[in-house]
Structures are given as structure tokens and as C-alpha cells.
Image (tube, rainbow, N blue to C red; front, side, top):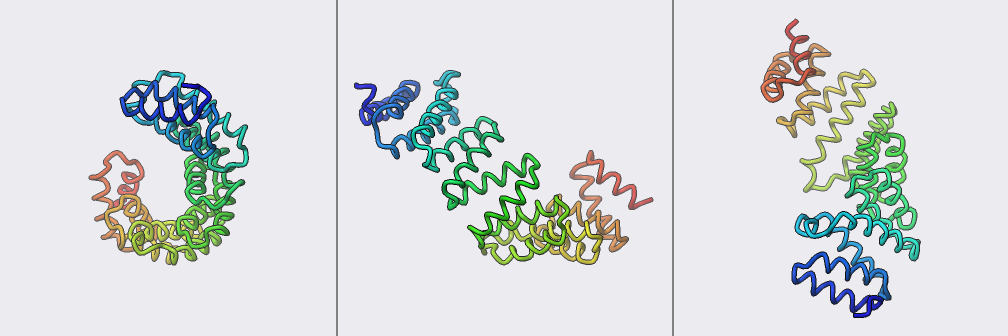
Length: 273
């Protein structure tokens, strides 16, 4: 089979893959990408090879050079088709997969610079920035994303949380409150409590204990068994010396759940001091 005939190499790769000879399939798919073949077909094969290095069955057959080869193939495609956003997104997925978060972030940002319509890519950016504590970047990027996706509740959550981390407490409260209305019916129980928790955090930072308590209680009503919500509620009740019976009950449960949590132990000691 002509190694430069992308169509033939793809067919050979599919046959090798059907025979569970994934190492040989990899070579054929690689030749298809480097040969003469339609760009969209090459992109499809990049996605396939990216999945290969993440699937245990295929990882067993591939040697240590597979990751380096895939990196080179993606860069080869970007060099030849720099304006195709999807290839940059594949590079982001690849770098994310191998744990190179900062390079993944660069690739995802290159993707939205070419085509900002892919919400999934924005979400990858937000997740990485949050994980790396890049609060200013998360704040700026999520604020920009709202212009493209004004009815996506998660973006308001990221923007409100990052605003809070940057001590923009009033703005955090405002954006979180405005984002609640966009939570879909199927997501209401999974996301509404997060909005209320973050709003409570912002009010607490402003020492507005009345509203802080109001919103953390709303979160507690939705998720009474959530560890974070229980921890925040009991902490606030102790601070303002309110409903200490409820605080005592919650803290007792938390101590049983995580007996080595120093914050809870200290909170319990403060409560009974």
C-alpha cells in the first residue's frame, strides 16, 4: 500500500484495528495523516489517535514514542492548517490528557480566538484556570464568555466565584444573582445551591451576616447533607452566635464524618468554650 495514499492507509488502519493489532493500526493512521487525504479525515484520525493513548487496551500495545509522535502529528497539522480551530482544540485535549495544563490552556485559547462559538472549549479554559488558581484570567475570560453565551448559568458561576476571589464582592453578588435565572430545570438541584453558597461567601466577606446566613440556609435547604454547605453554615452560626443548637448538631455530624478535619475540631472547641 502506497504510504502516501491517505485513503488506502486509513482503510488499512481500520482493518488492523478490527484485528486488534493497534500498534500497526497506529502506524497506518499516522501515514494517512502525513499523506494525501482530506483535511477533515485527518482531523478525525487525530481524534482517534488521541483516544488511543487514553484507552488501556491500546496503551498496552503502543510504546513510549506514541505520545511524542502524536504531539508531532498535531503540530504538523497546525503548521499546515493554522486557521482550523478544531485542530487547536485537539492539541488542547492532548496536552490536558498528558497533564500539561498550561500548554492545554494556550491551545484552547488559540481555539476560541479562531472560533469563539464552542462552549465546551470555553469550559475547559475555565476549569484549568480555576484549577491553577488563575483568578484574574478566569474573571476576565468568563466575563468575555458571557457576551457569547448570555444564558449559560455555569459562566456566571465561574465569573462570580472569580470576582469573589479577587475581592470584587459586590460584583460577585450581582453576577451570581443574575445567573441563577439561567439554570435549567434539570440542573436546578445540582447548581442552585452552588450559586447560593458563593453568594453567601461574598456577603460574609462584606460582613453582611444577615444575607450571608440567608443564602447559606437556602443552600442548606437544597443540600442538607453536603459537607461544604454544612461546614459553612455551622461556621457562620457560631460566628454570629445564632441557632447554636443547629450548629452543634451539624458540627457533631461533621466530626463523625471527618474526625481529622482541624477546622471542624477547632469550631467544635470554640462552640463549647
